[in-house]
Length: 435
Image 1 (cartoon, helix red, strand yellow):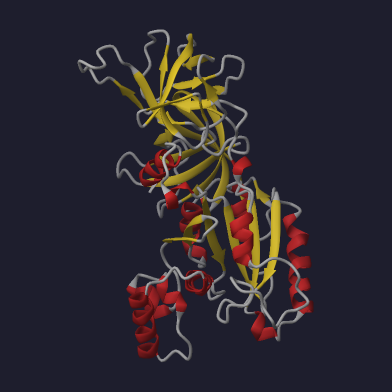
Image 2 (cartoon, one colour):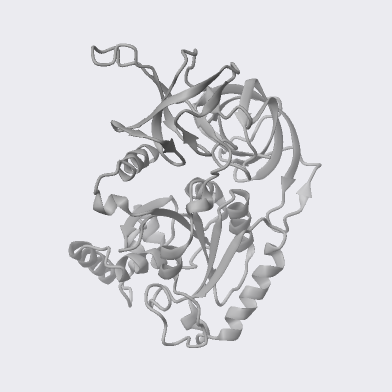
């Protein structure tokens, strides 16, 4: 999916009239407890925004009749696995794409069960916003705290709390206000920058795309209005220039006999032509000669553009190196503290050796210590228990075989994140956020 997005980004910034591709992209994830209505909400968004083909709607109507549902079950639009449809739950992350006249969207519908916490981490890792559903009858529950904590941990800039099933509490303003109050009591402990609340009924469509006539006491925006108008231009770090090199371009053709470019995605800051830069780890400096994008030369490049940079001096640069500004160098170290969410059934091994992928760099590491584990239910830190198993979140210390060029995850979600891989099975076993 990242590769496809690279292509979209390149087309967006090519300066050509690409119509649909020119619209701004918002990635958002849905989360909530089991049966809170996540899949139904996405189905309602797709249906009310006219993003469903007639044959899809016919198939959903027939499937709903076969299941004996009283209403057209819009959740069937996202629950694609047979087990999901049989149980009426979400098991795997389901990605859906749709667009309105203002913006295009990628939705990650994540599971609600505790045992699928790792799936939520996967779906939320690249999100601009998190839509967290709360059942109006049950209020704030353990999974609400868990999912909000993960959204905070992953530094998702915008959180929208959708209080769903308002039709089952007679559209009560008091029930909605109580949930807003309860949520605020624990969210103060978290790093939540922008939190909004919307009372909805996904089943009936109240305040999803169309404003509800049943809740005239609510004068805020509908969910789709929020999603269309969230300001996400500042979600990228535009201050600290970071360009991890993914590939060295050497055409060796008659037209470009001496061309040497460095391709990658801008991870932070703004790079400008003729600007002085430094290459890590060598520390050599040069100036940017040109910035190329699909045959077009740019004056500057910024996140999340994928470009090729050429320098005025011949410097030995390879995949895994990083181009930065001379006066703004990231941390360079081998001893690194991480917040890790463990994604594998086999628990983490203290002193165990794992592969680590950080931006375009591949290294190996050893787990040196577990600083503490997080009790998701009350957000307390447990410093005694050193075991880390599936879906658990902990602060750990690792030592890498060679230095990484990194920022804190809070400062830059790209240069501040790593994935941990079991070398024996090549499975991704942990997602890490650098403290």
